[in-house]
Length: 608
Image 1 (spheres, one colour):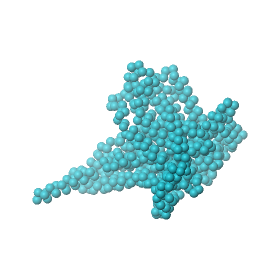
Image 2: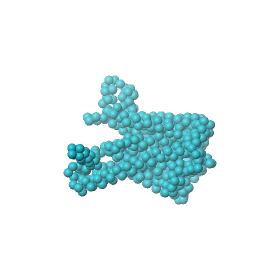
Image 3: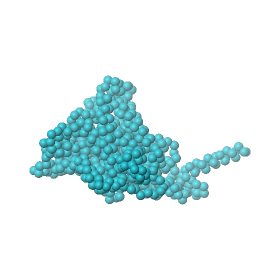
Image 4: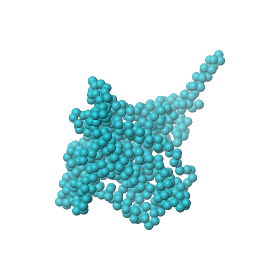
């Protein structure tokens, strides 16, 4: 009898623990227990489905990329066999100049990172920590190009500083050496500079919040003990924001290793290739396509970026080593620049005009010319290119495709990252660390390689069953775009989920609300602004993305980024490309303006 009583007690204890685990509290009414139980099932289904979707999106493409690299036939051709031939051809027989490609990729990545860090970190410190005049307007100039893609930057610089018909080059043609200097735009130096300028905004946004949150009393102590401004910055200010600097440095370097669009436009005249352009050429320009060798070539770059991604995750997880914000209040004190205030401000405005403002103005000017010769001509002014941009059937179809992909990708991507962020930060399920790592894993795969992996997945899976055949549809482009931006969107989501205390949902459960009711009536209303930021972030960045569409599009599924890229690379139609790019920039500007009117701005992403 004692054994039976002990068994019953054990079963009862297990039952009570199980009920508590799913949110059922003692004394709840039967209908409330049923509601909570049903809500828990829904919770498991939604969060479990999100995790499964994340695994499929981040792991499956890499599996098929590996399969294709070890396969003797084309992706989807099951008559082939496993082989190491592709790796032998790439790395032993040097069918591709792997050493040269890696050296060029490394050169671009290092140059891009140094330029972005010099400008981005310098601006962040000047705007946040000093009394620099007009810094608010300067920040607007820096933040505004955030959604302007790299390939448009490249075209703007060709129209402004290019050796052939560049406005500045033509205007200063009488100055010795100008032509020679402008020709460097199409070399590794020019490419690194343009992609570095394009990355300044990201570096600024990643470091400015850390400088805002730093306790200024530490700098004041340094100054009291006689340290000058430069010594204080070197020994106090920047060391305290090391995690933010290293995170920005690593993310920028990763982006530089996989850079494609600017290299494809500026590097083509001089034959300057990197990993990304070589992989794109192997899949898209070779006949027949060298799928296996492209996949094999991808893995050496993935190995490097995977190590850097692991380093990035380890750095950003050691935030407590650098915490200086405490419970005591303080009023940030700006460094006084004294007599240097206005000379420094005017110098910065000069830099901003040369590297940001002038290229945009020149591109707009070019778009109104029937034929651009490098010098503005009143008799050549026309609206014909804008008329063509809005009436051309191919452009209109590409624009509608971009809208469909952006809206769908932003909606599905937001739902996915919010659910995954809730799973990693608000539950006690096992494997949360692995799920968080998977959120960051696409950082280790450059966009052009992820596009290759997605198209291989489409080719393989499409042969398994017609229902999975997404090749040649907008769905495959949308899926690839979502994968690329999961790391960035998930960081925004996770950073804001932790700010909503779980006691609010716990209170709802105590009053009998199911998990789904608690989400709908408590969590989601509090998370609404952040969800809106994520949605708009994905909308803008998916609309302008080139790397995924360039690898996955087919006839009829071109997007506006593809149309602009082809108009330049195939026709060199600078005037029409400028008109399309001007419309593109105008559209993103009005989107940013709309966000500002709604109280949402991209330079607040870190804090929202």
